[in-house]
Image (cartoon, rainbow, N blue to C red; front, side, top):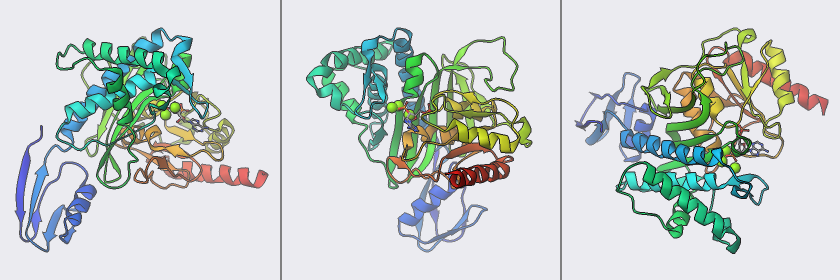
Length: 404
Ligand SMILES: Nc1ncnc2c1ncn2[C@@H]1O[C@H](COP(=O)(O)O)[C@@H](OP(=O)(O)O)[C@H]1O
Ligand SMILES: [Mg+2]
Ligand SMILES: [Mg+2]
Ligand SMILES: [Mg+2]
């Protein structure tokens, strides 16, 4: 728990805020006091104001998020090891969903609500319980409930009573919030990269917290991601240990540890400034992101290494520790990105020194509800490659338009 300081501001006062200064400013403005602030973090209040400044904001939330994502990863690993055909279903949009997607969502929703009882709970999550409430979904619901209870029991804590199928449905539907720019909202992708999960490849449990529309913390559990680098320019490592947990809190940097538990290490994006030395990540699925467009961008930049194609936000995690220098994502026409596919990943990369933006260079705006409206695509890189990458993207997009 962080320490809290109460300040009584009458005139110009210097205060120090651990965390996001901009967010802090907007908060005090909302309280109806005019506050002018400067970069030196001094503020002048138009009326007396009590400021409660926590030196470690979001600390409880961060701990709860790490716990929830780690347990959800345990559930997913168990299912992936012995995935049965009957565990995989098709949603109304024909995309796959498995008992592990539902189980992970129920578990994370349940744990967050239990661990943070004094906070209003709002969760924007990918799955809903519609199909599980039908007659045809009853066996699947029982299997999910078993998985959730087994995972809670494996945690060794006796504080959880066994959940019923109704509890599981309610926990899944805890994720029905629409998000937005007011207050706090958790954002969850219970399994990002379900297609990768079903194939036995990469996937991630991605959990983030929005405060006033900004991502303030993010956790990415990547059960199949090697602890050693996976960039295409890397030497093969002697270690084949897999399972990474990335976590980032605004203003505090990004850290990685083994999912099984280990000391945490601070990670940074790579500092490559010569695009020829850069390697890039993209979706494994060509249906999710145009491989043709990314190869045209890579060619313009002079990138020599072949693309690293993996599923899920594990790409953001890998980039945050410098495995590669660029992540390109260009969905096909008509697709609208969802916030849960990028919220956790974006803070993991930005706190590691990188930038996540749309193809026009605009910052990603998570404050507009479930959807993330972006111009043309999403690109992620380090500060040094930003300008040349944006130029190459612009050229490649223009060529694509003129060839139509
Ligand atoms: N046609 C499409 N274009 C772009 N993204 C898509 C898509 N269909 C599904 N997706 C999203 O791509 C995510 C996986 O990203 P990646 O390609 O990086 O592995 C999916 O997350 P889920 O697996 O959580 O559904 C899904 O939200
Ligand atoms: Mg997803
Ligand atoms: Mg998902
Ligand atoms: Mg999905």
